[in-house]
Length: 142
Image 1: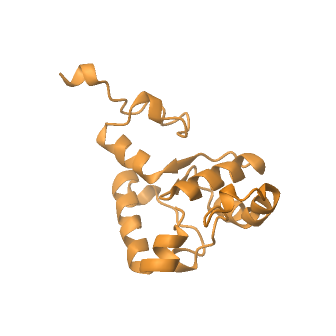
Image 2: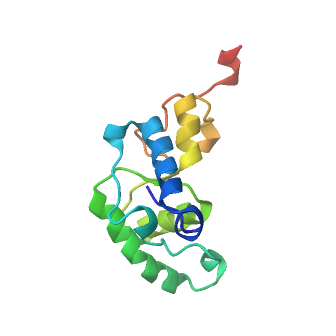
């Protein structure tokens, strides 16, 4: 799981990082959670925040992000979970750019998936193993 810079390192620190882990572990199961090293307030920045995604310095952003891509690959995890939109966009691009091919999924996507309310059009970033899980059909709820 990516610890977002703004809410963790620049704001609330490790207590909010623990809250994020509680949510993720509740959704995916503690046995399926793999933490990056380092993590929480010491986790590496992905390189996409602070306006960097829109800065026009794509090659520099991707070069900086290599540290994050290597960190994610070192976990051996099947997915990278991002709670921040900028992190999601940057890490997704890093995965493609460096040929790592791990899916990056928004935390809210996993929450909705676990509740059975994730619609078919909201599954773009899920891997093939999750694309058909718990698809909510409004007509079946009647």
